[in-house]
Length: 580
Image 1 (cartoon, rainbow, N blue to C red):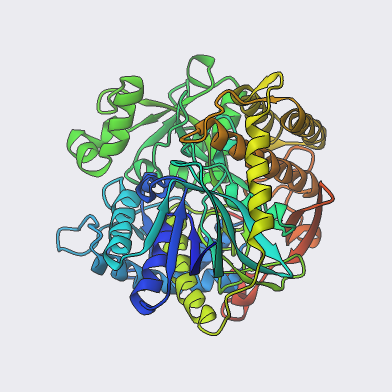
Image 2 (image 1 turned 90 degrees about the vertical axis):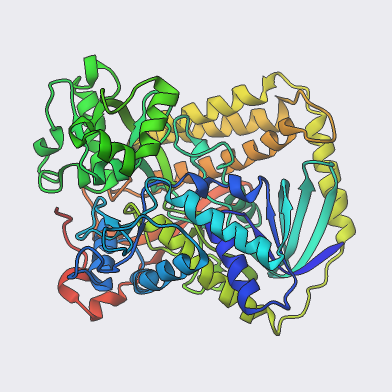
C-alpha cells in the first residue's frame, strides 16, 4: 500500500494550483497528484478567453463588489454570496500571484495587464493571454509543480474513493501503462477532476471530461449539487462543437442570422448587451433563431462575423479562433464568417463544498478528509449560470485556498487505518469482470446512444415529458452496460477500451443525476429552461438541488442559498428580475 499526506486527483488549474500552494508553504508534506492524462493535457489548457478580476487597469471605476454583483446576477441569484465574495475579493491578488509565477498576460500599451469585455460583466475586467489564457496559466503551474518536486502519477485512473467509517481515507488507482492496481492511503484527498461535458454529443470539452470524480463521489453515497445547470456556450464551431471563445465577441464580433440581422437586438433581454449578453441568454436566442428557420440557409447554425475587425486585430487578439476555423473547416475568419451554434461547455453543478473547499454531505456537514475545487466542485459561485472569465478565476482562487486549507488540516490528522486487501481484491475483480464482457453492445455505440439521449431530452429546452422519457432511456442504457456490454481489447497494458468502459460508467451515473435534477426543478432559471415552467419561481426554488444515489436509484432534496451580501448592498443582492 502506498501512502501520502495529501492526494490531489486531477492535474488541471485547480489541482495544480492546490499542489503549488501546498509545496510553497508546507514543503515537508508528502504530496502526490494523480491524473489520468499528463497534467498539461488537462482540459484547463483549452480555456481561451480570460480570467476576471477588478484590477482597474482599463476601468478605474471597477471594484470587487461590482464584480460580485455581476456574478450573482449572472447566476440568476442562485450563487452562494459568501463564496462569491471570496472569489471576487481575491481576484486581483491571484492575478498578481500568477504574474509572479511567470504567466505571460497580454499587455496594454502602458505595460499593465490588458483587460477585455466579457458577457454579463459591467466592466472590462477579463485579463487574458491572447486567446490562449488557460494554456498560459496551466503551463506555469505545472512547471511550478515540477520545480517543487511534486510526485505526479500521470496516466493513472482513480477507480474508487475509499470512504468508510464516515471519513475519506484514500483512493484505489489503476496504472494505465502497466495495468497495476494500487491502494493509496492519505490524510486528505482532494478532487479536481473537471467537468462532464462528454455526457452530451456536442461539446467543447475534451475526451477526458467524463465526470469521473463526480461519479466516484455519488457511488460513495455523497450528494451532487445543482446538476441540472449545464452551460451551453453560444459559439461552438459548427458542426464539430469546438469552442470559439467569448473573447471573439469581447473583441466586437457580430452574431448574424440568415436574414443578415444582428438578431440579439430583436430580444428585449439582450437588446442592450447584444453579443455580450450572458451565455444562457445568448444560447437560447441562437436556438430560437434556428427553431424559427432563421439559421443560415435554414440550417442548424448562425454566423459569427469578425471581418469588420480587420486582419491586424484578428491576428493579434484572437489568433486561436482563426486557427481553429482554418484547421477544422478551412474557413479563414478574416475573409468569411464562422458557422456556430450552442455547444455544451461547462458544469455549474458538482460536488458540494463549503467555502473552505471541504466536501459536504446531504446534511451540509463536512466529510472528514475530503476536499474538492474547480469545475468538479460546486461551492457555488456560478449558481444557475456562469459568467465567462469566472471559471479560471474559480479554479485559481479556490485551488489555492484548497491547498492552504488542506495543508493546515492534515497537520494534526493521523494517517487513517484501512484494510487494503479487500479494496485490492475488489478492484482486480472489477477489471477482470469488465474485460470479460462479451455482450451484444459495443462500448462506443452505447456511449453515443447515451450522449444522444442526453442531448435530445435534456438540452437547452426541457419539459417533464421529455425528461421522463430520457430517464427511462438512461436506465435502459445502464442495464445494457451492466449485462450486455462488449469490450474488444482484453490486454493488460494501455488498454484504452478499459478506461473508456470505466468512463462510460461515470457518464451514465452523472447523466442520470442531471436528468433527475432537471425533472425535479419545476421552474426556469439560468441555464435550466423548462418549456412547461417558463418563469423563475423564487418562492419555491431559490434553493440548491441535491441528487444522490440510494439503493441504486437517484434521490433528490434541496439546501438553502447563502444571501449574505444583502447585508452590504440590499438593493442589488436581493433576488430580482434579471435585466440587461
